[in-house]
Length: 80
Length: 398
Image (cartoon, rainbow over all chains, first blue to last red; front, side):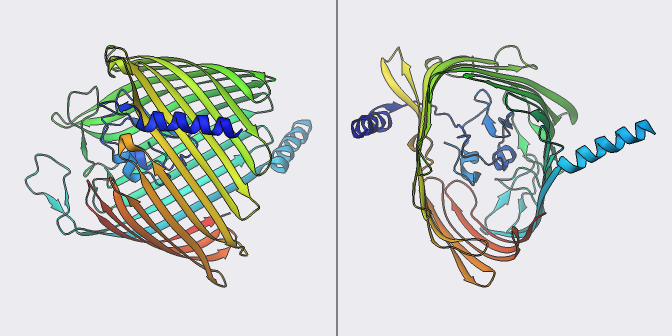
């Protein structure tokens, strides 16, 4: 179990710090953290966010302009 | 007489098994902003609206109704009013609601849902929606959908779809127009051994007003692991490969890997914590490089140091590391029972690329989940106008 944890930690370190980031990052919603308050839907200036079948916010990547307003208003820190 | 008897039986069956729970919250707020605050609602308006202080109100209502053990209905509604619209609230008046009605048993779940939002007319912020080559003011959004889930032994199937209409006012012509989108999603999974599932998933989006440009199709496949060892430990993990086809995103992002791991840990009944790691990575074949789209490391720990009659006193720490979207943040908060039914909470937030903030709250419990509250929140944003908010409200569950 300890070996698996160390291996996983190494993979995380490489994934976070060992790779370059893309030039146009995307915003996504962690559905487990979203409490469906709708703050991000209201603030989105390009109408890219909607509630899905589970009632959780989801970002349409074809519409999102990466303005970052949603990450500022999310009270659950669910947007990343 | 026979019909009346049958009707009485049906009514009895419905009322005996029915369960109703609802919750409402109403609050009034006053927001003070930096003296240089400017709110643009119209790019051609020579008179820029300045507001250093304005008030507003918020009313939420949530209803859950179970007709019997299989049929259910949920309805959530929020009405928001503010004297002016602001950078982080693009309408001074809006109402959003979600209605869901469905059936579920141990194998099937079927639900219909409706998401509506209505925006006030005058001060709604001008937008430039992707796919619409014009400035608009949003008027209303309607989303009508259907969701079906099947859990049959080791087999799991879920499919959902919704049709979305955005009604908007075209700013230059003052004409009311519609923008329509269709979204579909499906997942098929099979448990190969205990705790391990393999699955395939599909997503389709069709912009019905445009030709292809804003459409997206995604196929995926992956493996998921979930194990609740005991009350104190549980792990969830998923690895999902996606192939996406759309003209709107860079080609090298069309194939990407999504990884998520969550670990929950409790020590006794007083300390609980979880850590989440989410990664999206892609491989750029032209550069021959592995690239990270987004990473999230999130940690939360809660220590309850005093059990109260209705609420406990606790210390809460949370941290979020999200370097790609400058979303890293630290939060430290405490909730303290003062005396009798009065509680006090205070928290500080440090997000170097987003904002720094503080908030405090007095909460007076009336009974159970019914309380009066007085909140203060200060936010000093990096990219937006800073705000101080005072909010007083009543939260009532019945």
